[in-house]
Length: 300
Image 1: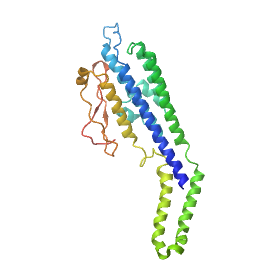
Image 2: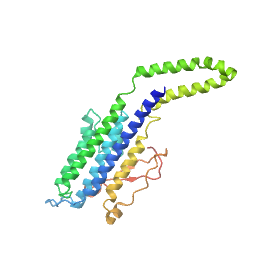
Image 3: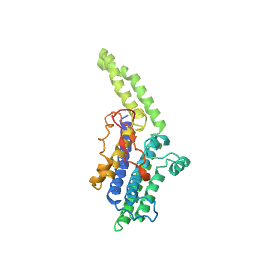
Image 4: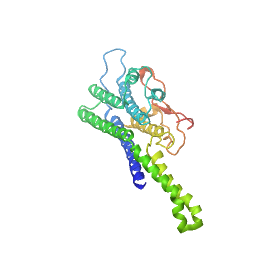
């Protein structure tokens, strides 16, 4: 029983570590986007072309959105879900867009494709002059290396989820624990006499409790009731990445135009998180920066 609990707790902690590494990688890439995608591209020759400043802002927001979309799809894959409507409600995806139709046609978990879209767009924006030519190739290489690592973390996570502890081992252990619990009173009576009546249920509770803890709660950390709080994890990561995009580099005029970011969501201690309001598009197709609805109530 101790070996079984050690094994399943290691799996649980390993999956928790892989989730943390995925989040760290996405936030590091978002920080690189905020630092290096800062140069306004040359103006387009068309008379009604989008101004360079708005093109730059749209490019930065688009890269951050793709990072959030890929992470949301990775978490959905861990929960065995395929819910694009929730991603549309969060503003990570536009209904009936080319991306939406492509994701509907895919059969796999789809996060690798979105990270590949990010890398493709990063190279495209670098060619348009939104990165310093001296560092553009190095930055794009960092994007590729970081997102490949993030993909490896998620694939390792999916491997742990799809390869649980063998069922025969769990059944044999359950039979052993059940047998031990049934013969426990007879083993305690010679030494404890009538006190065994009160001690036996307590000992049986601990033994069977440890078995159920390992077989039901720690086996799959993404189950609905006692698993990881994925909505809070995703919301906090989106909030951090969008804060990086907004405040790096420091631009007081731009920050005043976008308005202040609300405080960090309080979903980690069980408080409900508000839905993310991505706003409505402004003139020229540039999306307004997302705002958290207040008060902090409603559904996650």
